[in-house]
Structures are given as structure tokens and as C-alpha cells.
Length: 181
Image 1 (tube, rainbow, N blue to C red):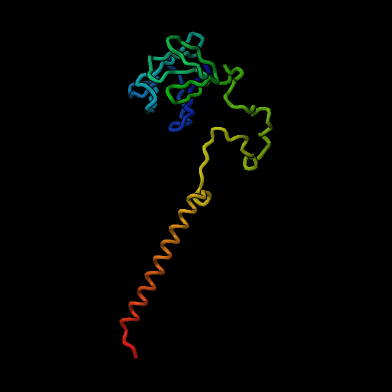
Image 2 (image 1 turned 135 degrees about the vertical axis):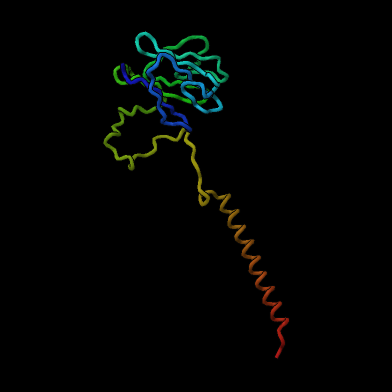
């Protein structure tokens, strides 16, 4: 039998893989689940992976609160067969289903770019440009944010004026109290 596994694609547990060798696996947030994913969008016993007679797997939703989807299609009462490359969404967590090379069929992903046709294997990754920013969160550093810069400079100016005023007051106080020759 091939190396059948699932790999979590979402944030907290990204890259975590589970090899599937048993006939049945429960996926859920509860500690009693065979595959425990501690995410608040996942029900205690969210869904079940079932091994078929042909050594493939199917998925069944267990009346979860946030639902189970295969490649974006919500499943309810039915048992849905899984293919290598399918994306299983359990609550808000995405999981890649991988049956190894012997079961690999043509895979379709949600990306717009076909990486096989780009010839990127010969391009140094340091020279690659971002091919798109849709859905990418960008962060701004303080020095790049004009509003923050203005507030920072205003604060520095107020503190600077206060320090100068305090020095002038101190000098005047000391010179008035000193004896005149």
C-alpha cells in the first residue's frame, strides 16, 4: 500500500503530517479523536476518514458545527471518496490529502499559476519576484507609515520644547539667586 497521509496546511499546525494506516480515523478537537487538531473552528468529533476496499479513503462529516468540505464543496450526509491532492477543510483548517505517487492523478489547485510551466526550477529563489499579492497581508514598518511618523515627530518636538523651557527656567532661577558682584 502507498504512503497515505494528510498534511495540515493552515497556520498553527502547518506542515504537520499524519500517516494513515488504520481503517478509520476520527478528526476533531477532542483529545479522544484519533487526529486531534486544537482549533476552535473544529468540533469535538468533526469528521471521520474511512478506508475503502481499494485502499483509498473517504470522508464523512459527523454533524459538525462548521462543516466539512472537499475541494470547497460542503459534504453533509454522504460519504465522499478522496483523491490524492484533494483539499479537506475541517472547520477553518485546510488539510492536504496525499495518497503517494502510485495513486497520483492530475491535481488541480486553487492557484492561478501553473508552476510546471513557469520554468522556475532554474531561477534562483532570491531573484524571483512576487507574482501576485492577492490575499497577501502586508505589514508596514513605523518609518514607512506617514501618520505614525508625524505623531512621532510631534512627540519629539513637544518633549524637546519642554526640555529647553526647563533649562531656561533652571538658568534663570540660578542666576537670580546668585549674589551680584
